[in-house]
Length: 207
Image 1: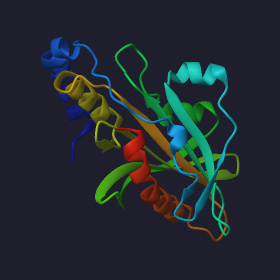
Image 2 (image 1 turned 90 degrees about the horizontal axis):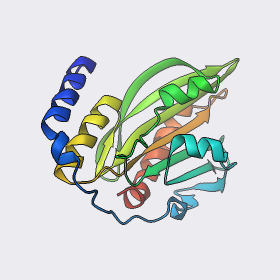
Image 3 (image 1 turned 90 degrees about the vertical axis):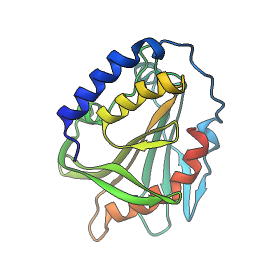
Image 4 (image 1 turned 60 degrees about the horizontal axis):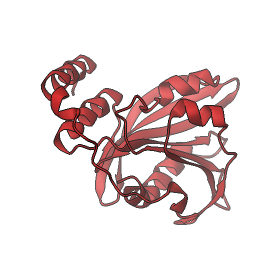
């Protein structure tokens, strides 16, 4: 397993070797609005959640985002947030949920990664159990763009610089899926099933 220290070293090496090439002009990438994500996804029905405040959107620096809740008749809602950046060269970079969720009063109780089958391939994403007071939620999140799904924040930054130099692209985004833990329900199983159904549509919208 790659350690965090190894990833940091690789990141610094990439910065030294590729910094000049990464400064090249950004290659434009065509993408559709995230709002085109289907409202019906394999039995889940989506509804628009409360829009983020202008101050929050400005802080995130996203070029596009979607915030929805998806429901099944027999289950609790699953909340989806996806934020997309056309370019991450000018200081607008992805904010990790590891920083944002504690700021909203949620503390991590457990953390791990989970590998699931989605869009015909195995992908690894972060899985967290968070708590505020007596309430708990299961959270899956990952970084997506340029044909990759990446769980590790440091690996994502290293790959971002590699792609900036090799492809002249820094487009990408963050996807976060979360749901409440309720008695008699396997929340992690429900989120896993939803993410597997969601991935094919996201590949088109987050190129």
